[in-house]
Each structure stands twice: as C-alpha cells, then as structure tokens.
Image (tube, rainbow, N blue to C red; front, side):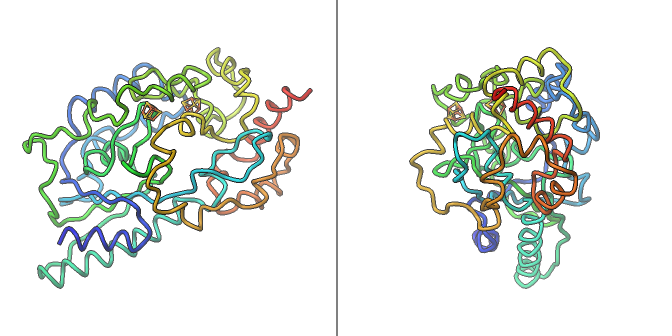
Length: 328
Ligand code: SF4
Ligand code: SF4
C-alpha cells in the first residue's frame, strides 16, 4: 500500500515522498522553535506566533488525521540570469509554487483516497497543505524519513539537495507506523542533520544570519529582508545587512547559503526541476534600475502567478533602490 501511495505522488511530479504518523511535535523541537520566537529571530513575521497549538499538533488541521504524506517538488537549481545582475532567488522566477503544488497534490490525494477505498473499503478524508497552514513543513519532511536537516535551515533530500518545494497531504487513514519515536528514531529532532563537519553555508552567509544551529536569524537574512519585510529597513541588523556588498546586490531572495551546499552539487539529480518553475525570460534580465522604477502596473503584469508577487511593487522598488546605491 505504501509503495502505491509513493508512486501516486511521484506520478504528479514529486522527487521525494515520505509518510509519518500524525502526532504532536516533539518537545525538544517545539521548545527550539519557541526559543527562536522568543529571541525575535522571526523578525516581522508575527504570523508565526499564531496558532501554536495547531502548529504543534497537525491533527487540528484535519480532525481524525492519522498520517501525513510529505512530498518534494523540484525547481531548477540554477538559472541563466546574468551573474553580474543583482540576485533574484531561482525559485521565484517561475510560477507560484502554491498554485502548482496544490493542484498536483490535490490530484494525488484524490487518487490515493480512491486507492484506499478500493483496497480497504473506506474512503478517507484528506487535506492538502502548501506553506500557508501553520505547519512546520521542514520538521515533518525530516520526521517522515524523506529529508535531513541542513544548517542553512533547509530540508535536504539525500542524493538530490535542497532545491525543492514541500507540500503535504493529511489523511484520515493510518498509512504507516514508520518513524514513530518508539521505533528508536527521533527523526525531526535537532540531531538529524545531514551536514557532517561541513559549515560551508554558515561561512558563506554574508550577514551572519546563520549561527550553525540550523536556525535562521531572519532579522539579518537577505531573503526575509527583501521578500517579507514591509516598508523601509529601520533596525540596526537590517540596515547593516542591506548595506553589505551582498545586500546591495540582492533584488529578491538570497540563494547564497544554498549555492555553496555540497548536497546541491554533483548529486544524482533525476530532474532539473519542473517546467512550471522555469524562469520567465523577463526575470532573467531584470536590472536594479528597472526594479527601482517599476510601476505598479508593470509589476502586476510581471508578478502575475509568480512567487515574486509576495514582495509587492513597493518592496521591489525599495530593493532596486538599495542595489542602485552600489552603482551610483
Ligand atoms: S538566505 Fe542569504 S542572508 Fe539568509 S541565511 Fe542564507 S546566505 Fe544568509
Ligand atoms: S552547506 Fe554544509 S553545513 Fe550547510 S546545509 Fe549544506 S551540508 Fe549542511
């Protein structure tokens, strides 16, 4: 049964699939998350403080949920964007992953539900989650046995790397007992790193946002500051980060800690990424000057259906203006 479930999800484009029972998150990991919030490292992402009881116990997202299917969908690890132009994260140059994954996971869930009904005589309920529900996706990807944890805060799929989006199917049917804590594994807890002695990402982070514990201090992270942060940068940490050479060379998101990761180089890559996530040619040539001057209307047209819409036109203009300081 489990293999058929895995195959169903892979038919819809996943390069990795894992299954975990739906149980509350482990104390150790939840305390780590709470400590991260208490330190203020979530910066302006106050929504991460909401619904702690749901975040801790995913059964509250779907009453009666017994299993969570975690899936990884690949985006290209590299783009053809001119390296002399300021950085735009590779993942953001194609279609919005929320829409793409939701569609594919919904089709997979319908197929899995039908499969269970035909083999076991019950039709389970299910719910698809893609980034928007209060769900610790990377934790569950590790707990499902699919991924390892990276010191750069990413989930790592062994043999593939970390260039993928995560999505989940919660389902009211017990698919597996694998990876239960009583089986001797503590998957998802802090010791489950796939890094060995490597600290390349910690060294490569230009702003000190990575402290070597697997957590990101978003107050200093160029990804957060150029995507999620609204308005002018005002805190000392943000101003210092955006004034670095890397900060003045970042238009949207930052791939620096991902690019140096050995898991993303020379791997047994099965796929170069799904076609929906290939870059829109206009994103490959967008300059700092164009970003600084982009009108609301042009931004709407450029960002339609893409993850980059998250920054909004004002955010992209702000980022462009910051990059122009390097050129003036
Ligand atoms: S995204 Fe950039 S700034 Fe953020 S942790 Fe990675 S290297 Fe550092
Ligand atoms: S760069 Fe090295 S330390 Fe960082 S996530 Fe990759 S393997 Fe781990």
